[in-house]
Image (tube, rainbow, N blue to C red; front, side, top):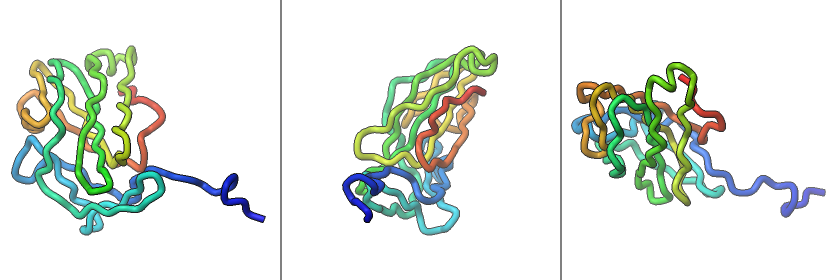
Length: 157
């Protein structure tokens, strides 16, 4: 006999489809959700399913400036209303990552949100401020990755 209290999978916060994160369509300080399915992204928070339609030019959450010559992960999350937020991770000097000295770790998502992807920002002789600096600015390299959930291992390169 199946016991719902002890054997069932409970909760679950995961992204169920590719978000298609990319640089903002008309504002390079923002991100777009441009899911490959053309309909948006499906996700679950604590076991409840939600949907966010494709959207353009969604502002990143303001955060402290990222120093020059560093790399940082900005975790992109959605809440149950489909409101996007970003969580800035810990900056690491780019040289320390490429040499293997220090890995780049993922920040924890804010409560009651689902991580759908991340933007990795590498700076070269410039600073970066989420929501203020263009992701295409000179000296800024941006990389977008869609997620099912937050990876358990840090980035080592």
